[in-house]
Image 1: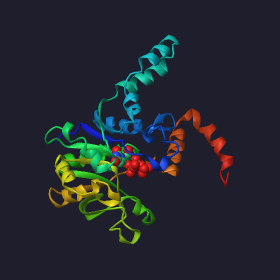
Image 2: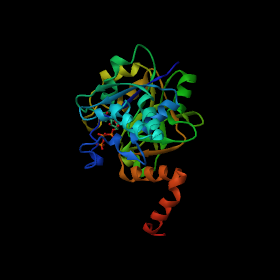
Image 3: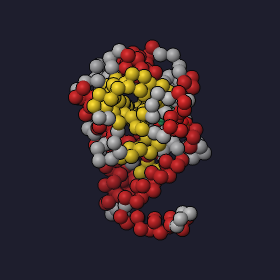
Image 4: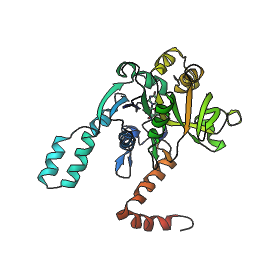
Length: 290
Ligand code: UTP
């Protein structure tokens, strides 16, 4: 099973991040010195996924532009002898092959994935990475799923344990642990009430899916919140072809949530040796125990 294509849905309205996202896609908000979506793309590349299909809307052209050349800026940097910056922007322009497909109505994550049906050729399995979810660890999050999908020849979704009080924000699974951290999925519930969640294993924004997901997406009615839910199509996949969940090792930041977005900024800035001491010096007096 060769997996080299990834769908990155970025067509949502980003209402939780208003007013910042009134005219800027939330996937383009910076985390330290890069837009959110660049971290997602870098995780894809580190996992062997170089062919990217962005699912966009009419206001998101800037995402595609970010991964293309800006010849005028390159010329300016070249003339000014700013070779390091020139290299940085040229690297971004050449890191992926990308296409984009418009999701003309924001009918949910499942609908966004379905928009890519025509460009995901034949029976090929592919990855889906949600464009505002950042993951970091020794092994890229999506690579952890690809390894299991390739050895088990099944669709695989990424999960992480969340506190009980947060289960209503996620799709939650239940299943049988068939080896450490790997579950045969039985049930998936989108945003359950706290006392109705079948577990604390939350679906996070990483998936490796077989092409049969498209026929399931076409067959389902709108679910939770009136949206075409990927979770509902995955339930059909679990009932028929089978579905595995892998507990992803690493850190995750949902950048659509302000506290997590700001934490991600601090986390990445702290990794920069030149910035770390200054940042700590500025932060310390602001903290209650500073
Ligand atoms: P979210 O659940 O974060 O929704 O989508 P959202 O609409 O973008 O944001 P809020 O909740 O209003 O703040 C998760 C991912 O799925 C994409 C989003 O762009 C985001 O990357 N998405 C969501 C789509 O591409 N299309 C949709 O119809 C919905």
